Length: 279
Image (cartoon, rainbow, N blue to C red; front, side, top):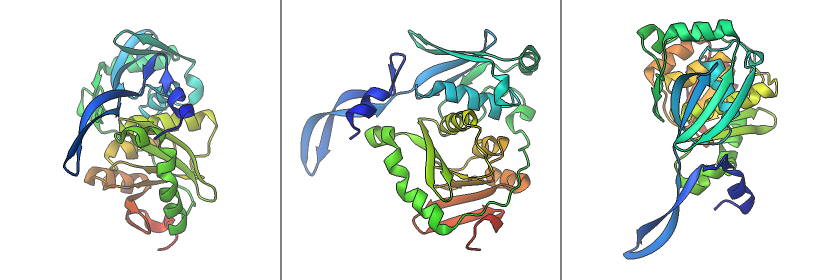
């Protein structure tokens, strides 16, 4: 159970990241009526220069981080400085995020013709052509190596940082790990790619060197996780579940070290294993 400070912090603009609902719980042959905490999904519309681009179902926290991370990893802006302003508004049926970007960037966005709804698990949010759907990943390079002990330590400490998931059991997380210091930052969301965008946005605000650490995701490593991680120069991505074949191909192409089935004292390296110091 989360503490009172956390329960107070998960409210943003009147939308809660979870709801309390009465349920009938059956255990060991006995039934009881209790209150259960369930994760919330809220429609979040991203509007660039006054025009709606995409509606995502997301956890209504850290939305400024999300807006920045999404804008960069989707190629809408080239760097954090091009996001001129972000304003978040509560609406009766969701949340509206107004973003201001340079006119030249907005025109490129308008030419793509993307204006669709993205579901929680959507990896093709707003794509209308095959070219838009699977973009070539950015090439990454770097000399960072991690040890099995560093990976295992981060994995063992992951759950204590997942406050919302402790409460609801339905939330993905992505963590940024400094090899010598452990987990530095973590973001949570009902959508794994949303959590990654939130984390990237937060790290961009700190002018983080993305080649100096690695990321861990509590989900599977699907192709959009590889695309988004490489978009900012991440060289190592570890997932507690399996990668997809497309994610592996993109990781091999980009230079990303992709690790799957990362559990206590075990993992599988699918690409560029030279960054795993034990090999």
